Amino acid sequence: MPKWNAKRGALLGSTVLLLIATSAYWVAAPGTASNRPTAQNTQGFAIHDHLRRVAGAQAQPLIARLRSRPDDPALLAEIGKTYYSNYDFADAIPYYRKSLSMKDDANVRTNLGGLYYYSGDTKSALAEFEQVLKQDPGNDSALFNLGLVRWQGARDAAGAIAAWRELLRTHPDHPRRAEVEQWIRRAENR
Image (cartoon, rainbow, N blue to C red; front, side, top):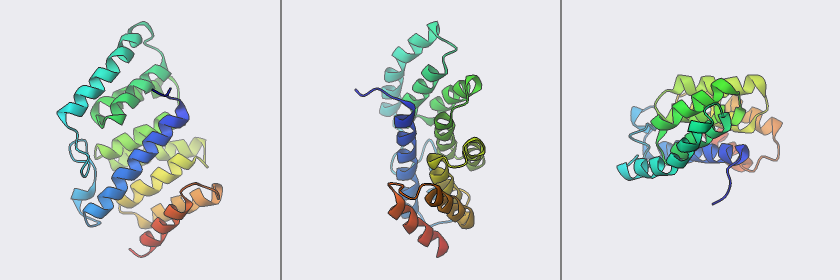
């Protein structure tokens, strides 16, 4: 099993957010409540009891380590990531919050923004991405996700376009440039 690092965690978070956001776009018409992913309804990626058990089983060794290292923000974030990767958003959030209370980290904060969005809290998701951008205005993960959540969650096409244009301006060789340009065109036509 590969070792997790901050960059891999941010990539996982961004990828999961992208998959859920784009599937939400195609499953439900824009503007309807049914296309916002939540912990119980992630547009075809529903949390099943099996996934919760898997997340719990994977997290247990990490939680055991936490007993001897309760103030380790990286370990807390790793536990949160374990729950997050198994779509157990409700259990992931407190670990990310506690990690951030000890050490601010853009990747952890970006993942927390995604978790808030999946839990139906668009306002908190946007606040997390904007906080990252206050500290690191060119953070590609935060700009990418800010655009998605503004478009899908807040129905703010102009805000989404602005975030994505800033992403492409600050990262002209972004690996998903063509896809982001396509989203900009779609948002402009809405």
